[in-house]
Length: 457
Image: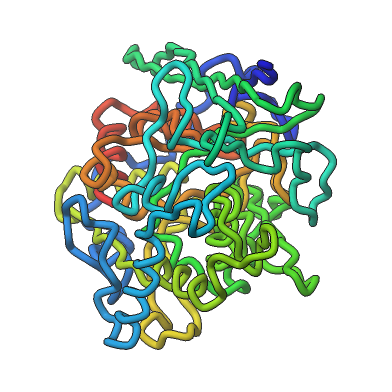
């Protein structure tokens, strides 16, 4: 019953003039001309957004495996009690008696988000158990429709079962690709090739699959409160300013038929954390809520679900580090000069919330929360709402430099293919291709400075 074989680099979505997806990114000779306008010497002062308190008054200065686990430093007693209630659900391990299954990927939130961090990518070969998940759907959904469930499988493949054979076994092999910078320095990239063994027979023709790695939990919370108007006004789907960047809003229709701005998930497919949490409970654990009912019983009630979402909203944001280091300062200025901040917008703000301590904060997540075409190299050939197979939400950068401290590994991008910040940058294509070319054309010292800056977040 081996039924599907795909590479996470399958082409999909918008057309692109880039090399075929089976080729590693190659230097663009025109990038050198663009760099003539880039000042590569460290500036006398750091940009104003290179600050420690990335989460404003919520910021934690903890540097340990608990860096993603602490409550916002400024919340009062009532909020801390609610935070603890939500944490109890997050840390819980479900059993069949409390609703787990019949198929599942993990028996609790912490199973996939260890220390509130992210899962590492699997090693070569089969895995049947907790790890990266495969999203699956049937083609044909419209831009304002949820992906269609694949008959017999739903929209997630589950690799555990309470009884009997698991729904699927996922096999992953890593293809290695060699590349070279203009200065002769070599690098190696890799892409996953994923095959699925399913228990329900052959997957239908046109089945859409996407390998996803569970992201870190600390960070999405405050993005919940960035005003919709701020996200919409930053969009430029027709590239009217001519900078080559055409960020688009991901529109999601809620249960009342109202269009909402999507902001959570790799393709911004959820408009709030209650729906994000309910989806994870249902799809990855088989736990029923009023938003995603499974059978007759509701296993996590509305109040418990709201507290779980609040737990994520009220997590402290890790502070930026080494902001006085000349290398980090140089990297921050280069990060801006070559164009990274066009999508990784340094600053956002929160609007009004139900928790006064989280109101009107100036935060530094380094994301515009918009969809961007990242080219065929990162395409997964699985549209979600209006996001094509090659479009992804700009990933926030805050806290990324602590991944190894928290989880003992670095697994970046939606499928964990990037083992370092450098690899993640080199995979950027599509709209980001000119910026990647500019990065490649820098000296080794300047590339190291940009990497040091990102790792300081």
